[in-house]
Amino acid sequence: MEQIDLTKLDTAILYVQRMAEGYHPVTNVEVEENVILDNRNVIRCMYFIKDVLEEVKRNNGVISGTKPKAKRAKQIDFPFEILKEYKYQEDKTISYLLKQLHQPVEEMNIKKVSPQTVTGWLKRSGFLTEEYSAEVEKVSTVPTEKGKELGIYTETRRFSHNAYLAVIYNRNAQEYIVNHFEKIVHGEIVE
Image (cartoon, rainbow, N blue to C red; front, side, top):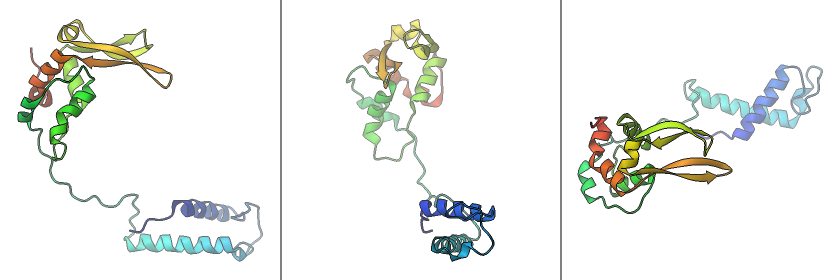
């Protein structure tokens, strides 16, 4: 399907709406009958509308904002054996830890593990919780005492006049996540 010029489409919709309401499509002034069709902008608009309607007809009446998706190859599960290659680099947020873990398989069509999967598991396992932080004046994810003992801590960060708590994982916490990664992915809680 050929891409339709959206600016022209917006103009055509406006012109048609004005004409339906009895106004001149270009000047938006109430008009007498048969005055409108002498304007070359209106004539161009009518041809554009005709082209759009013919395109809809060619598509058997289907109007779609997207092209049909090509079938994607089935994603494979995360290859947990690559975790043996994990090496601690620095204390970091879960997003950056996952980026590091996914990096060796970046070219493969794997199901990536989301930060929400990991933090949700850590919450269910009692390492993280949500509570109001007076420091940033909003509810934030923070480590529990159990999480602090594991090596999870927070840092206050600022972004465009907004403060937030970044949850940071030290070496011990990262290694714990890597060692339990398969359980995290499968939602198995460790007691």
